[in-house]
Image (tube, rainbow, N blue to C red; front, side):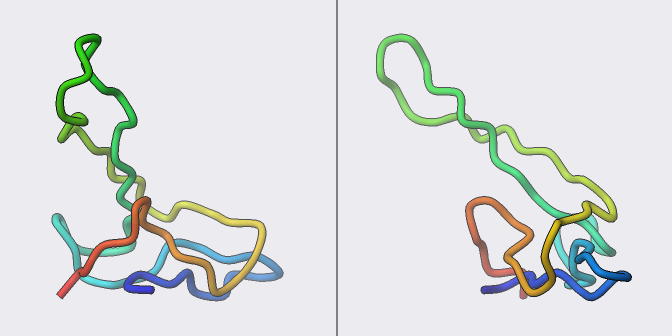
Length: 67
């Protein structure tokens, strides 16, 4: 896992791994695919301080190298 959540109370919050715009972000790819079955969208969103129910989970979806 490249971007693990960090402890925040009893929950986890998106990791502080430097990324596309840096900081405490979680990157989520769009799941949209064109109607004719073409390539998946390259659209993604970044959510700063995304919270999770559990600690030590992967923040990015899908997992990606954030080096």
